[in-house]
Image (tube, rainbow, N blue to C red):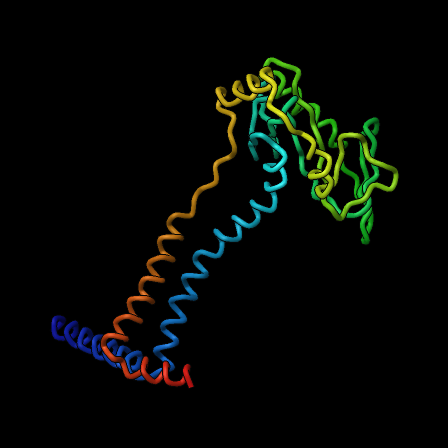
Length: 250
């Protein structure tokens, strides 16, 4: 009895599937819908990876252009049993440079000798710890690792920030970097190259980002499915495809 029920369910399923396939084969609307759906799914699958690549290009591009070599989003030991995070670590001809990003908009009030800086925006003002203090800890961590006092540090604020009372010498907004560091030309000094090689030997490297190979493979399969459906319909002279092409070329 159960076997007859299962057979009836299977027959019903395949009958409905046949009706659906006939719609895709004979009716232009359903044919186009299937094709667009497969391509849309492929686009949605691959879109997060493309957005990540665009964000990384926008964020890292200027630093890679001004440096001989660079590491990004690195974690390094601080020498006292902990770790410090460094956004951008750059190899320049005469030094190793740390660039910390501070994406703060509005007016920024701060100085090297005060404990708290202030950000003023439309809805109010906010205090944050002097970021130059954190920068000094990062400089000491890199100098300890390299065994040399060859590291300088810089703060990079967003382009929509301004400093009404002036900026410390090592504070920039992003759009200034290309002009300020464009003159960093010439070969890397031997001692600086040795210090950089020392960091690499210690395993300091950019934080790995998990590749989206699975997403790209799925997107490729969906595109292949769409292409296969189109080729099959073309060589099979699907009525839906013929009507669709007639409307498209009219």
